[in-house]
Image 1 (spheres, rainbow, N blue to C red):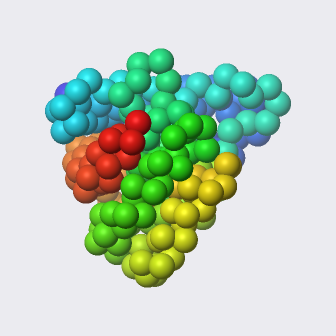
Image 2: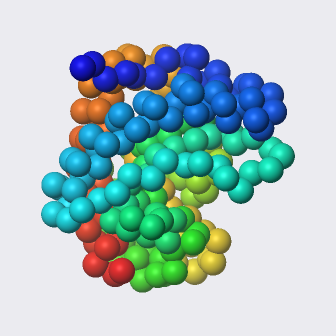
Image 3: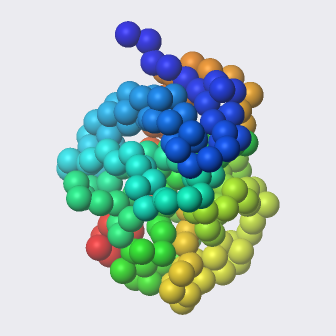
Length: 209
């Protein structure tokens, strides 16, 4: 069975007006692909990490009026939820696909995680230059590691440590016209390779959990 990639029509879901109509688009077009890719990625990460990982697909259940601007799958060691823990993501905004290792504001031990990553900042700075960093999972903006020096990375990690609502996400973006997206197996391989490169950062973070 061939894996489905993502097409322009998947990204166009985010221009659908209204919560109910957009959610129908997400549920019918995007979530089946998340399930297909996510099951394979979860199995792969379970082997890489050496313990069972679990797939979570965003349901956007708390939304009552405003439709979501993005949607994602998350993979975490906790079956009950992922937001309080370091976790891997794959998701879409209207103008890019993101592949993240995410530390978001709900993580109770993010100060300890940040301190550990400051001490081991080379794990971040030595990643390929096409990796990007975001400081807010709700915003599209991200900065290429190739445009950052070690001081910039440490400043971002200090913010994660010191500011209650601060976040730190690291990974890759793909544009909707990327050839990688068009073939599901190619996207799967690219995502696996991205996660593998992020694994040492994940392991340092989990040692603080």
